[in-house]
Image (cartoon, rainbow, N blue to C red; front, top):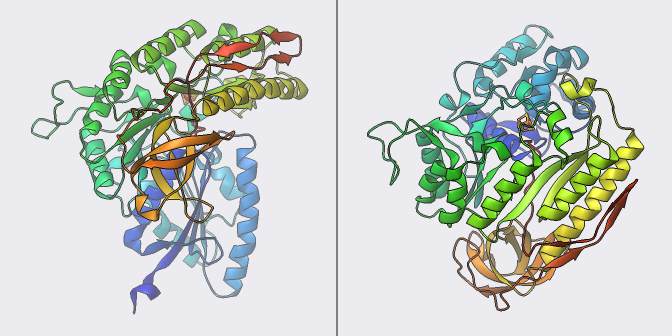
Length: 515
Ligand code: SF4
């Protein structure tokens, strides 16, 4: 029989953040030895995996409606004498568990984020259940196993490309009162440093020039130091490494031009990591550092474990370490008990700090979290009005930041072909999407690009020079970035003065995992 005939088709639909993107790729790695190859859609797939996310509103309901569509497909395939296996993975699987098998009996397999290394065994069990003359109740595995899945995953089967994600930490012990992560991803766990270095080296050998280190609370990283006798480059000593140290070691990998990390918690931003921002040129000057609210009263109700003053101090130290650091954040508006005054404090903090990019959401209760049961739930129209005001302010800051790049020459890592013929797209050091006309041979290279115009979410540029350094050190023809004025924003009962955004700050990665 030919290899083609042996191949089974796998379709993974990924919801949510980069950690889920990474997990989906690793699921494909686990399944590759079983003959599974990726297919573009569920129609012809032998195995469909929904890798779900529980962060956003109505996450579970969206999964159930997708499962409704898959039920019809599975039925049609069965009528044609073909078998389709449907699996639900990720955080909704972890949170809903057996409820999925009860509400959606077409599902064969439910497994959580910590058990996908067991996929071959789970699929075999699901096949036995299917072959046993109908349903045997589906297979459920939502344990938090003692052994780490990373000890059991195979090496990556396929390179991720120029810009790669590498999961270094999972789970969270902080228990913010609005967040499901500690319940769906479990306790904080860091991978050993040697394992991460080895994976990063393979990624670079496979063509990666940029690696983004991932974790629900990535700067809480404290992985075991490499054992004696294992090459650790210039780094030695210490039983465990923090993220700053790990970044320094990864920056030594030849061919790796850029490093990023997400998502961070202000409390875990330590001296070593701040120093890395000053001293490691490969570490890009962009940081997603969620603050969530500008009100200390609300931060306490959120159980964030930091105050606004702590955030201000950390930002000041970061900016002292890296003058052009661009900041991004997450915000929740309408948290239970949030008053007009609290919201005004959020606007004031945004105005004071100045963000190059940010994500903002209305509070929505996640079942099982403490905030869901709190008194003082804010009416929807009030939340909507506050969100609109906050987003107007953030959008103005982002536009100002983007416009401030016009005329500068920035190093851009070209990652993909653009939508227009002859166009390539890449990222600036500040995570801005940059479009320019260039021959396809420049894909995977860091070029110097002169920024011509700025749009709300991207920059248009022209090729300035074929090679540029890893960071933002390319000289700009007009080197200064003008300071910009953010328009005043009025909210119910609250007026925020118009303010100046301090010179340069920054922009976007698809985030969504909270820290
Ligand atoms: Fe942990 Fe971040 Fe969730 Fe808080 S918001 S519990 S820090 S993952």
